[in-house]
View (cartoon, rainbow, N blue to C red):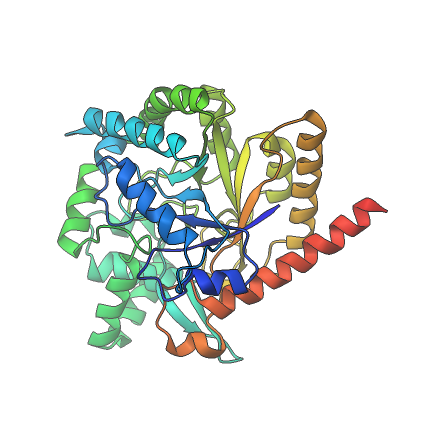
Length: 402
């Protein structure tokens, strides 16, 4: 399993030098400054590769850009409106340029409007660490009383509506503003962010798009880009919805194993694969992560290893980002299944037998607490997680070799 690290570019507070000291073997990055739907040019890709290949003093880093996260899919493509056909053609050109540059793994998602949703970006834990959290009551308060989305009241039962009303009434104006910013924060490093009015507008544009229709749009997109990716030797891997439940009245189509099965079977090419995110999928108690890794292992092209602690047993409930070996996912068991899949691939002679993974998210600890890094992407918290995951892998590999 190749140990990778997400890096947001030269503005990232964690430098390439830092990642080397963490023992990283490869970098996960993207051209966040390029507008969604535009072509990733050869020049921009090469520039990012040079930045990754060079330490602060100009010496070679010895590591490379191994995984793209993300080559974003535009809202026009998801809705099949506006410039969606041109955006698909641009996506294909970008794939060709990435293949020419030697980058083979491309992570993306098909979440409408917002890429991920949290109500707290720095929730304090008893030991003083902070983490990201999704509080369902706070989210309901946002949806009902901050965003004031038409029809939102139908998405929450009486008890939750009452709790949200009480929570909102007790919120300071500062907390209401903070909550709104947190919910629409979206993917860190993204080239665009939305105002509340823009969020309302985007949501309204999905009023006529059901889950079935959005899935059909997704399959149309995959039918266009996956054969090219297959020919180029690329591996596309879709990240699950985060959280993996319906929010804001928007359709969710990549939250469960049946969701993945529908699109993987519809475009049944090896290039059409999975980013198995143990945190996103693990936020839903009815997702069988070990079973997914067993059943769909040949199509798992990238692993996000993180852990969440669910605060209820409900399918839609509150959760927080826990330590990598804590939380509700049996991380040791999941890594064991991934290592068995690697061994199977290696025995088959697959060139892509080594599955890249990264320590996804992390709690802010020690010096992280004052650095104001991207939420979820602290240096020391992720280093701690990587060290723990590395120890699990080493122990399991030693056992397999006996």
